[in-house]
Length: 111
Image (cartoon, rainbow, N blue to C red; front, side):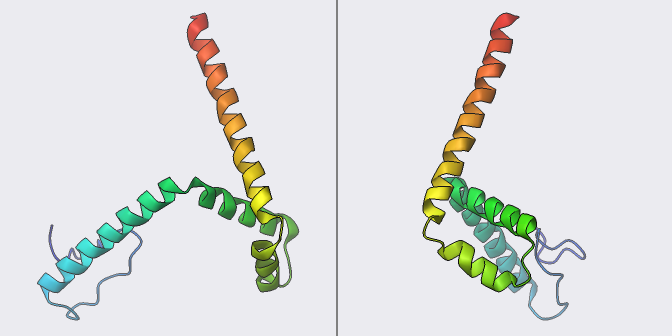
């Protein structure tokens, strides 16, 4: 891997500052960025509840369209029933997946 591809920095990173780093330094930074991204992906795979939490937060924000997003966010993430809400959303997602698998299985076995 080249240390500094001209207009192709690692995904979701800023463009290169020409001359700020030596090629070896830029290569090491690129490798660290890629490694960090892999670590983050693994973490997210181990914690699917984070995806559900963020999806629900964004959904609630779009539905309610609060004037004060900071106050709304603070209220959402500190709500005493948040943990129970996320547990319920996880159960709903599992039920949906199980129902979809059942339909697919039935379709396969009907052939």
